[in-house]
Image (cartoon, rainbow, N blue to C red):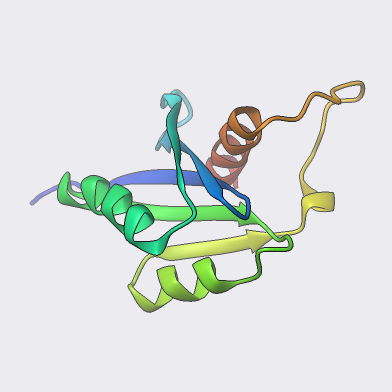
Length: 115
């Protein structure tokens, strides 16, 4: 029987780009920055298919924003689990005001894996 690997994908979505981070399953799983791609469904599909071809089950998350829910609808219609969360509901350390795409998507992947 083949063991299913779960990968938690954090997406920081903007009008022109999507930053991607991956958290492997398990408490000690690695959390790494994958990179930045154009905000284009073909590019996103190509990237996610790479993980699916390795036998991974994907669980994606991104923050609700001005870009809407087209990514959510696209991923769920293709059988990929996806959640959209409110930015105000993500926990932040006090005094941590530095925000950038890489840090945001890493945080989303880590928090999604934690539940």
